[in-house]
Image (cartoon, rainbow, N blue to C red; front, top):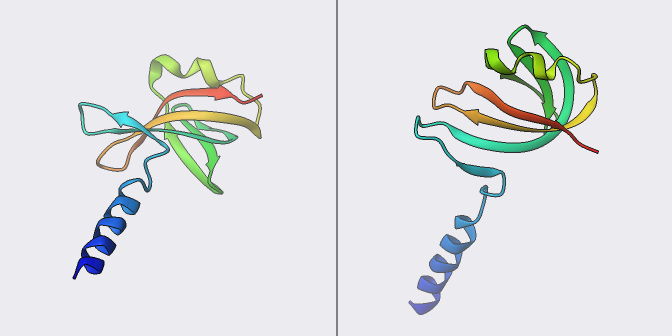
Length: 100
């Protein structure tokens, strides 16, 4: 009986730490803020950038006030992106920095 309880507690503690290293916090609007490294693929259109994150091309919506900030980044540049993921799955770019 004690071995079973210990095994369950160990499993709960092990799983409690999984998946939190990339999560920075939560916004009040239900959006989750994430920070990841990737490769800037380019501008998909006026309000969307494409970044290769974890081997997958990811589209991030760019707010109007930040659109000019990312136009000078060259394709295939290593970047660190900070973005929010809303409950509906929309990804909104908060910041993008070149990695050196």
